[in-house]
Amino acid sequence: MSPRTNDSPRGSGGQDAPRPAEAPEASTAPSAAADAPRSPSPAERVDALRRFAAAVRRGRGLHGASCAVLLAVAMTAGAVAVGGDGRDAARAAPGVSRAVGADVLVRGDLDTAIRSLQAHVRAQPRDFGAWAALGLAQVERARTDGDPSRYARAERALARSLALRPGNDQALAGQAALAAARHDFAAALDHADRALERNPYSERALCSRIDALVELGRYEEAGRAATVADRRRPGVPVFTRYAYVRELRGDVPAARRVLHRALDSAAGPADVAYVATALGNLERGQGRYGTALRHYARALAADDAYLPALEGRARAQAADGDRAGAITTLEQVVARSPLPGPLVTLGELYEDRNAPDDRAKSREQYALVDAWTALARAGGVDVDLDTALAAADHGDTAEALRAARAEWNRRRTVHTADALAWALHRAGRSAEALPYARRATATGYRDAAFLHHRGMIEKATGHDRAARASLTAALELNPGFSPLGARAARAALKELEAAR
Image (cartoon, rainbow, N blue to C red; front, side, top):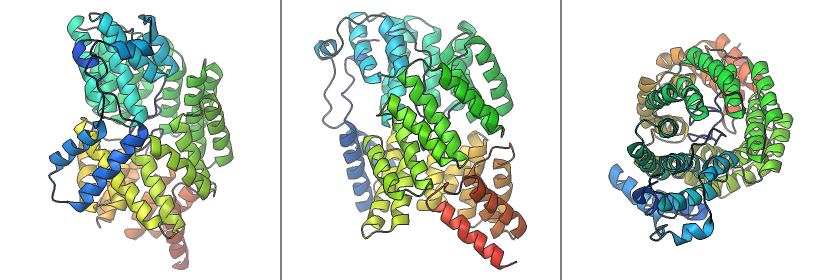
């Protein structure tokens, strides 16, 4: 069911793709709406990240907390307060009503939703539903623009909603979405359960419950939660989550059927873009690049600015041998949303191309990953999985291992098992890594990167026959799964074959 929150394969390196879901009714208080700063443009955000990354490289003695504060300041530098008398927001969205929250959020026009809701809560500061809707809109916008500073605004809006109407299910469901976005999945599950006690048919709470169970590694329970959600609130958000649960259990045909059902039922451009992208990601993971590219094209025909579809298209282009097209597309993606997943892939594509300036370009992408994770931590996001995956291949292996262990201690999923296995291997502790690599592939979930990691660990521990099987399976499943990883898998397999 869940097209992955930050560490699910449907997401983008630690941030989820936005997904259609139930929107609470509209409401907020002067503290969360009136003094909310204007968010910087994508170009301003990327420039701030670059300046911060350069400062860190020049002065590595800076204290981590100081770095995070400096980055947060940089990311909001020049921001203009929205509000005072509310005239700017009112000009942007005259005649706001309670209905605007649900309609606009479902249709994905989050900037309009946020402006409308901010104007509305200035006029109606005791509208608890609008506060909840504003909080949820800020969560969803953070997922799309990669700006975790929005989470604090979301938290204030949701708290205001609960102060006005204690225990209201819209705000509790919003808190579940916020906790999931920050990767606090235990809290997300608690908030979702509390929301469902008050409203068993809350689509947002039903979906957040599935997401939390998936990201806690409780896959059997997630499957049951998906069945319940499908019975209570069938629709695109539930269908896509149900498909992901099936994929995690190794049932790709069922996942494909459910996603096609979801696409057939998609009611508007936002739903079409979302589901078509999920189908593209599924097919790309199975090595069916032409089919994946057709799905991404359909997603972009519905919404030509949908970043998850652009990122998916770039990854499919790279896997299919169109490196130049992949680089061009990913450069567009990171210029608007500099998240770890596309940054690492772009850095690896530069490394693989190896043109005169590409080594410096790749280093810049990896530095931007470090800058983003600092900002995310300042916004209360747990980024240990992102840190582990990026640092294991392109950073400090000791830091990768620390982060992977911390994440494994919090939640035991196939993704955290894979991350810990790879971090241990990269730290020279392959014998310890092998049980985790096996656990990562134990549910039947078929991911070429997992198989590659397992094969390299098996090779390092002298399990040559198993290594050949794992590496062959990775390349047969998805021969272009990673710009550098696929090349390393082929080289390792060649060594193993030569040694037979």
